[in-house]
Image (cartoon, rainbow, N blue to C red; front, side):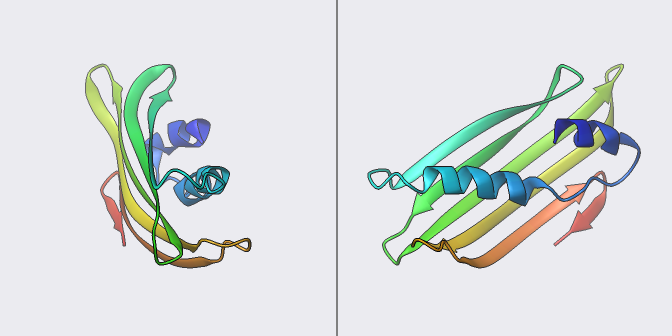
Length: 116
């Protein structure tokens, strides 16, 4: 992911965050005692801290699991921001053995190009 992010300085980035969030959500879905879990990640590009990603996973009483993710990235070269990325999204999954995907609502801004 980070190598792709580094390549995005000159153009649009591939939309890969849902795959990262899906994997992390499925790994944490086995915990029956936790109702809400928050995971924070640091994003680095070429060894420099460039942003953060926060994932909030919530097991709801209606039989669903939601995963809300927010990312903010700013890549700088010589103190000048050369690339920005922001993502905010919520996924809803059925809390059962099949873990069926129910909904996705997301927005992102890839260096000035907005996606809804």
